[in-house]
Image (cartoon, rainbow, N blue to C red):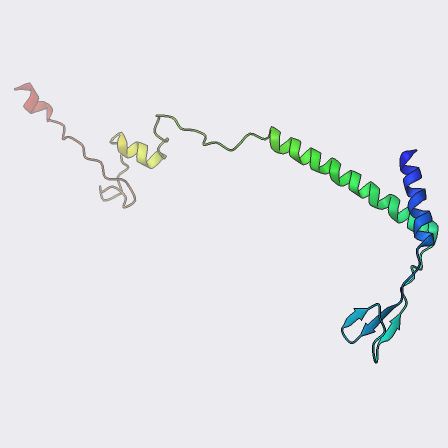
Length: 134
């Protein structure tokens, strides 16, 4: 009810406002005539219903903007800040080639050499069984 009264008051005030003469003097605008100035039409061609509708839409837009701002602030408040994840003492899992090389099971090529992309693994030589039996 209060909003309706405010809109009606604005419509009535807009209808009683008198248009002032505006002159264009080159690239400037003035309320006083100037040499070579042109008088511009400054009256509002909209009807009272159109003006009232514009006021209503503007008020509706303001309410929706305030509602969206409240929602945004609530979402920002509820959002947890980003934190680092996964800090633990375990090493990262090795890929299959690296884990095989780590176990000493590097695949041999047909010439008996490990592939070029295999990681180097130092392995203690195994003592021959005949030498260990003596």
